[in-house]
Image (cartoon, rainbow, N blue to C red; front, side):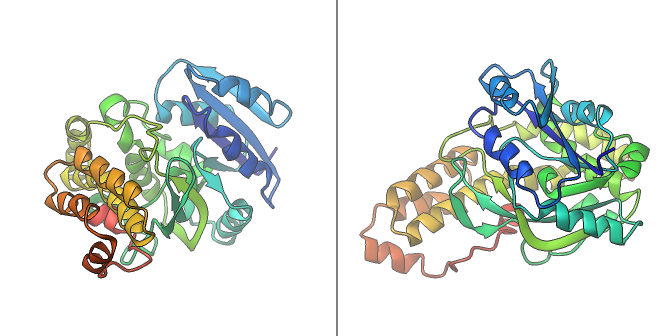
Length: 320
């Protein structure tokens, strides 16, 4: 029986999944099994996964969403700990070693998670990390209910007993609400016990909407109706702050990309990032001003953006 089951849900991930699987095979901790659950891909994902047949078990299902794929992988796994690694993210070689040690050291923890380095959809580093000031600690249940906490599925290692007790991911959170299956899962897991936090970027989280768009951006207004009823009934709180923060996150990360490109002197990339941010949220005046700045002479544009630090605060992705 392996100590860790690594479950990779994949949907049309041919462009990225080989790098994801390779990052698992390069772990310093190797007491593991790898299960890829293909969620009805129509591209070349399955043939790529089959190249790893000696190390990766492939499960195929009709398109049902990431929550159902993760649960399917968990049902077919046997590890003491569960890791749900998205098919476009990358682990550093020490991710499992550090995470397993943290769970082993404190049996009360229901899961442990780490910070994330950010990259664009082509894997280009954005020179910032996900967890910013004010979020650099393991959250209480109340914090999870009132703030969108920067925990990514790929960054967490979950205790199976806690997963089983909370019932896993909610399969019903799909379609319009699928971007909240992770938020819902963190809340349910926090009821099983405290979280542990490793304040290091042990994974690279790929932003899937720039410069190439690898995924379709959800309609978050529809998600509110599904998630709101659940939170009101169970906890007596509104989902609106969580949904609003999730909707702001892509716009803010695009702004981060644009500001970095301006600092680097790459005005075409900055212009494209700000234009995409405007498309995501046409009511955000600041990004129109940033876009217009990309047409100014370089020296003037640099002086106008001089207040931005080199390492942009990543919690802006949740708070801006």
